Length: 150
Image (cartoon, rainbow, N blue to C red):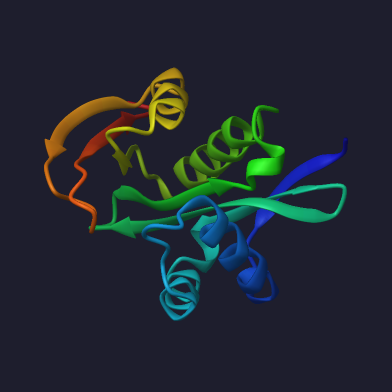
């Protein structure tokens, strides 16, 4: 299995949307919104490829010049459990930290998404706060933060 992380490009939108629908069927971002985010965050969003196929992505917006807001991260369910999410996040965070000087990252995660929470905690993310009724179906989320390179 040959894999690598690279910056997102416009041609990735359709595949990113397919992964979004598979991973977040209850609250997937519309394709038009993903397209907008990818334009806003073109130099801070990444995909991971396995044998030439995009199997995951992360979209990160820089807010207030110094906060990396991870809007969405997903790995095609058929490729989970191989460390690809960890690799994608580590490379994206390190690249953004190095190139943009961002030292704090934030994300929201469904309270019930235990595998994702375990991954984020293993990368150094810590709980910040809990937001009840964050998702359309009423489920709450944890807002998690990672502080790097101080």
